[in-house]
Length: 158
Image (cartoon, rainbow, N blue to C red):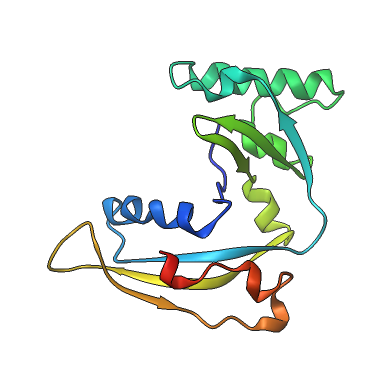
């Protein structure tokens, strides 16, 4: 139900997820800025149960389906939750254990509502698995950015 894109809202938070990529067997990982090619519609979910780790994921999905039904939007019952949400071209903003989390259905990517602009590239260390051996700032095409360079974090902050 919850397969989607989970962007981090700042570069430091994104860097915290690098070890997850090494755990998955990836040799390289990248941090990219998501560029909105069109205005996004966001459903804000304020139910505190969504941030509870002990609350079952299937029940959380039911809460979201009910919230959409209450708003007059039906979600395909047989489709995984985020696929059904994506059919409405809507993103979710929900509480998680640490604050708020933006959840983007994969359909947003397929319909060209989003594009990625590479910012940083990282390689896993061959000598010390689970750690980063190389980090490089990628020079983006500044004309493609829809934010100023001052809004981007300095690589030295990683």
